[in-house]
Length: 176
Ligand code: SF4
Ligand code: SF4
Image (tube, rainbow, N blue to C red; front, side, top):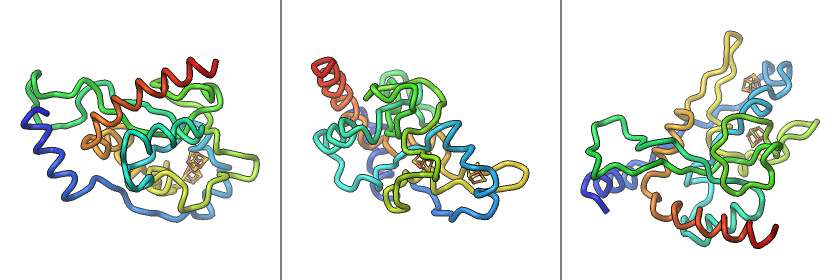
């Protein structure tokens, strides 16, 4: 592991990148889950607990999530080409249009956990990013940092996620 990534991993382990837990308001009842129809919010490592290749693969292959990524190193500080990671992988719920894909870097779509009655997950099961949306009349504010925030949260698990991608893709081909 490159030195700068090792330091970022140490820093993030010490102070995990997370987001506030904000309860829905009456605005949410009026807007009928437009956030969930536009783009599923990302899971953060704290949503899964123990992060291993096996736990990530099992979670993804259960259909509850897919692996997505930030297209390059998510760190805002300068990272040399040798030290940078090629992408910042994270987990998010699948979209209806790509519900058969365990690995999906497309943007946007209706979340598979959305029903006519709203989110089918309990508050505890919901992705951290979904709970970090602050409802607002002039637009809701995402306090999770969006895709970059999710990629930063998962940065300590880059190797785990890259290994999980390979396994999930192989398993998915086998099932087809
Ligand atoms: S967070 Fe915003 S977009 Fe999502 S349901 Fe509430 S008001 Fe609607
Ligand atoms: S997991 Fe639930 S709250 Fe989050 S985007 Fe999907 S339906 Fe909405």
